[in-house]
Image (cartoon, rainbow, N blue to C red; front, side, top):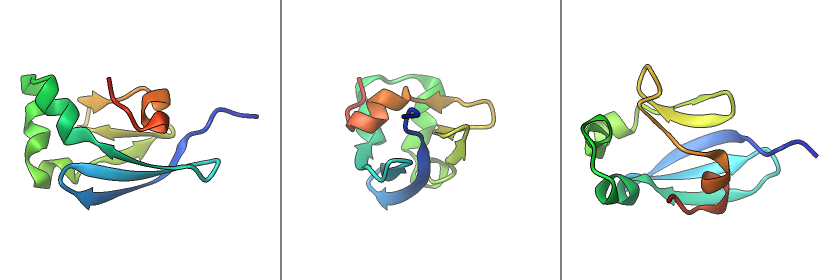
Length: 83
């Protein structure tokens, strides 16, 4: 079986996304909690809901920023727990 990848991402508010994976698994992931626990100038701008909502799906992953400023390991997203 191939490794799951993200096929759909939806902003559900409060800096949280609902991710649907290629095996039909769904996970709610609160990205805002991660950013608050790991403050960094590169990440902090995504606490702004308008900037947060500009994520894209690329190569089966969710990314923020033109140069992938913010990206997470797919296994963490799949488990719903960002380290």
